[in-house]
Length: 338
Image 1: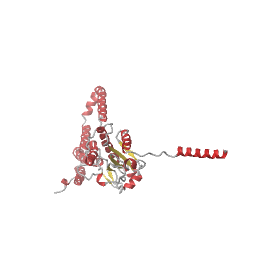
Image 2 (image 1 turned 45 degrees about the vertical axis):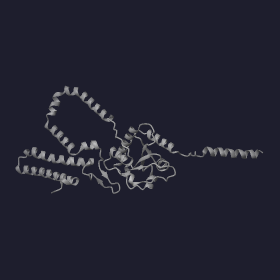
Image 3 (image 1 turned 120 degrees about the vertical axis):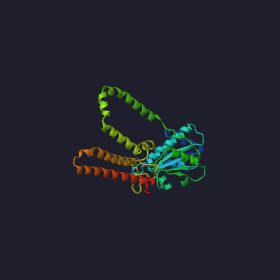
Image 4 (image 1 turned 135 degrees about the horizontal axis):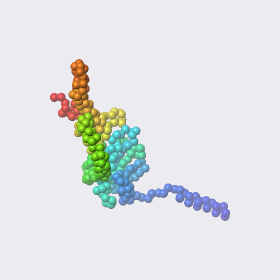
């Protein structure tokens, strides 16, 4: 009797232990519960972008049922991949997603569009299954009902961001694919903080300037200072620095497959940061050559030395000007010889 009781106790204890240690089985997932889970994940993000990986991509983005649209951004942000535009494209994508969230509000309506980001470091199997040849890429994943096969990449519903990513381009892509239009909403907090900081600095500088007014008057009357200011403004305008501030282009483009670096954008209406600085410094060099030729040649008393100095300055100017025109010809056909 005692042996039988011990055997029964061991069987009962093993059953209890296996019940506790066994992983919880997930019950059947309904379409509404799946949408609610993804909505809560997106709502918890300030930019409305949910980052998925190999562990949850199939569940939310590939498997059925899937009663929602997904805009999926596939990227490789780590520097070892050499994708210079991945980070800037992801930032623009997040800006578009945040703008969509601002128009959507905080209530679930049943026709949501979810924005997800998938990085190769956390989703190697997903990237291998889709056989991506290049990144970044954006796909629209359509809804599906229960019983349908898992999603496979559809090139016709994809978008390849260019070297000049903008949130408006992602918004237009969503409008073309899904017919949903929304405006890009940008925060003015940083601009207002910068403005107030500049105003505060100006107010704080009034008293020290008034106390040393003679020194500052002598300073602003120096020609050398105004020459530097003029060259700086000239460089800023000719190099497209205002364009860089507004458009925020990448510094250059590097093909991560060949390792080749391109400093000049192939399109005539766009530019890289390095491209603008190259043109700007070439123009400044040409300007300095002319300024030196005009202002310093009177220092030479010997006519031969003066002629040599003028010839060197003129040669530098011609070489730099020819280089500038040659680069312009690469960008725009209107600079070609007739």
